[in-house]
Image (cartoon, rainbow, N blue to C red; front, side):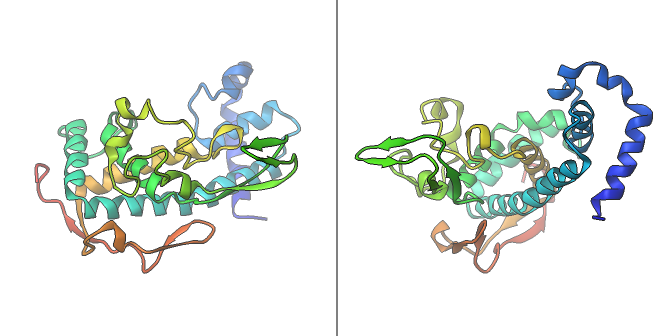
Length: 263
């Protein structure tokens, strides 16, 4: 028995007691029209899809938890390191954040889409330091690339890290510039030049949850603390490829309380 078993059992009991009415609309359940948390939604899905067992449910929930913990924590840490390095961008993110917050201390879920510049900063961070730098795919058909033919069934590697730093797609690619992702700039960008969550039908299952969590966490941290570093340049950041991109010697950050919102 895994640690998730009793949670699913308890949830299943509550579900059977309280949530039967939600099963009447099959299409609404499959599209998660009720905006339920992942586990509740998956229980709805298993109820309507009898071949989907609790074992598969447990496997999928574990996959999301394990995959998201490492990737989101590393991305948030890298965003904070780059904001510590580029103080003007940290100031812009905080000005936007405090404008959205007003007199409140806590960010609301409905506020997250309003954090436009924060989203640009996160995207530029993931462009330069994609937490998953390399992905593998099996070809479902023959593909011709210039003078080469890649046969159906071949396993290929897609170097996300290299695509994101390719000067053919990105001007001055080693420069940290969140404005690359402004609405007017990104519309001219090739849709597959930025793929931190992969793309297509096999893209990251937790992408939406990752965005919600990263914005929520960053808003909470930046509203309370200022972030500093002794690094002088992004070139001083040393990293290596493991399963995920790992920063050598950790994230060199110093944290101080944020005393004034307009500071």
